[in-house]
Amino acid sequence: MAQEKKLLLKLLCVINNNYQEKDLEELILALINLIVPVIRRRSGLHFKLANYEPRDIALLTISSLFVKNKQGRFPVLEKLFNWKIVEKFLSVRETDFQRYLKSILTRRLKQTFYYLSCEVRPERAKIKREMVYTLKKSAEYRLAKNKDKLLVINIPENGQGQPSEKLTEVQADQLLAICLDSGLGGLQVPKFFKKLAESLQKENIQIEVPVQQLVEIYIETQKHYLLAEVSSSLRPEKQLLTSGFSDFYKNLSIWLKELREKNDSLLLKYVQKNKIEAKEKEIYLKTLDELIIDWQDGGQEKSLFDYLQKYQPELSPEEYRNGKRKILEYLVKNSRNFLKNKLDSWQRL
Amino acid sequence: MGKSFGKLEKKEIVHFCNSVSHSSDFKKRINLYLRKSYPSPFPHLLGFDGLPSFEFYAEKVALSSPDENYLLRILKNNIKGEFEAHLLHPEKEKYQYVFIFLDDLKRDYLTDSHGRVNLGQVDLELYQIEASLCSPSAIFDIKPSTNQLPFAFQPCFATPGLENTELQIEFFTDQKTRILKAQALNLPEEVEIKKMALIVDESEILLAVPQKGLAIFELPEKSGVFQINFYE
Image 1: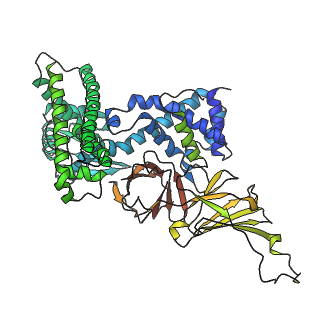
Image 2: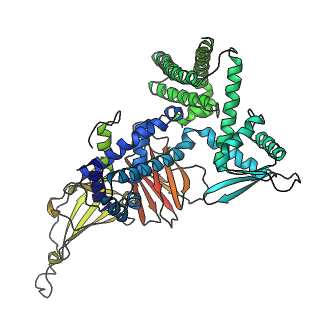
């Protein structure tokens, strides 16, 4: 029997609640095998930095399907694969079932990425919050709810009658082009929207796009701006190509590994000299890991004390000032210099 | 189907499957022991032959924990062939929503808010029962909110070592479904949350196997007050 048919029968056993553990194991394994390659293709550097391996994302995506209720059944799985669907697929071609399964898993995966976005990319959540706050206060924009999306609407008021064009979700590229042409890079959120409203008014263009898309457009604009800044600071003849960036990310992961080892051995010396307790070593390392992730994702978000306190909740400000502050500040300074030197030497190459 | 899956370790999958199916490998499991039952000192049934003896209708056994704080009574309805279990403890956190594991059945059951669980018609040898239990390590009461921003909650009950643990929750909407993302924060290094239970309005219970302390629940249509329990 072909794999898909087998899988379908196992699914049938599970949703009918007459399965053996082996059925469940094989079903989960098959689903994971289907999803892992997609995750490897889609999860970017942010996920790696946030300590999420493809297997974590796969298990998280799959586990949301296997949430059990009081009766020992799997309501989410049963909703996606009810008996009507399973019956239909038992009588059609196996490729159709495979396609359906893949589309379900890809959609669930997309949802998992979305649910994790706040954690993986805290800066995005922060930008979104700031954006909603700015737009609510702004007279040029209006927020409206459409189904499950929050739309941002801007209608130019220049007395020239109807706007010549309306940009919606599908014309996001055009809106990005307007942002880039208007030089909106490097601007804080309130100023960005003020200038964007001016540009839209000048061009007599109306927009109606989801907030989430505006977040992406804002980030893309800032990325382009930063890339332009970096490339202009390098030798003029040297263009930063995509391959250059992939080299950079490869190097970055090596530098971060080296840095961790360096900090680890330094902290070990502190333990040997009784400057810190053995259990504190891991706390400092975790604090530094989190700080370094934030450096790469928009910068330090809070005070060093707050970073350390997250992993040592009982830490009081007095205790911090008395001994730990000096150590942490030294480690941070060293780490920053290490990365700065590595970056300088990479740029010189 | 059983082919290689890259870096993903098979034992991880097996562990996940075990947790999903029935037999979670709880670290904080308490074994229960059968208690001897003595004949009633009141021979009120003797000579009273209008009704058959109690055993005709039902049989019962009692199990207790080594410290005798937990008492689990298992009743067998001889007419219907059904089993029911009642867990007793002086503290409600220790009998409400507790996993009871019966070795013979190789599966676990979750008690309700009264410490009761209906085992149904199962193949169980009443006087040779071997059982254990796992009560919640941390309990969080969640106030429903429409706000999408993440909120952190302190536990209303926590076993020693988990007092500083927090639960961060975030709501999402997917078409008509409300999604709840629950993430355990500040967990001690050695602690692993094996199961997370979402109790909605004391009636609907959803059980998830969290990954890295994170679980995603699809909420029932009408949901009011939540409680989330962690099990180690």
